[in-house]
Image (cartoon, rainbow, N blue to C red; front, top):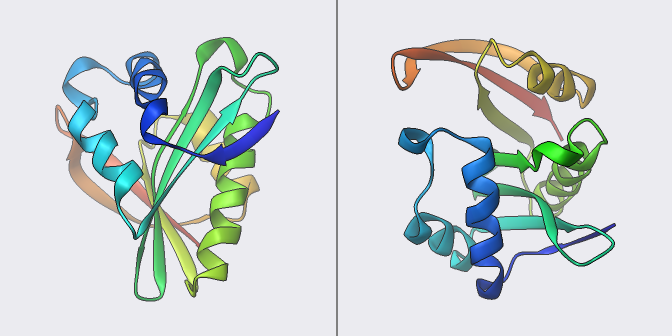
Length: 146
């Protein structure tokens, strides 16, 4: 498996992954993903399978001494194989290298597999953001020191 920085020509595959990971009202648009890929203070990583197809994507941002894990999507056919974790670890290395001291994320508290992965990676719960996700679902805010 190969991890690389997303490029503009990856956009269609990233959007296809987006459709497997989120309900229509929660999906990022083509414009949003294009902006993520082109933004100088963002890192979008993709993981390719043995055939060169993108099977996972993660997006990270940087602001001062903190980085945010904005999005992780793994194709349903390859979930629970560590692909998402590998992208998050690579993002954590990037964030530390560019001066971030911690990384934050929001996750649905009822997304037990994701919470378990983040906990294994060292993230700890900080707070809850009420009504963060539509329709009125809370978000668990987690952080890890880099």
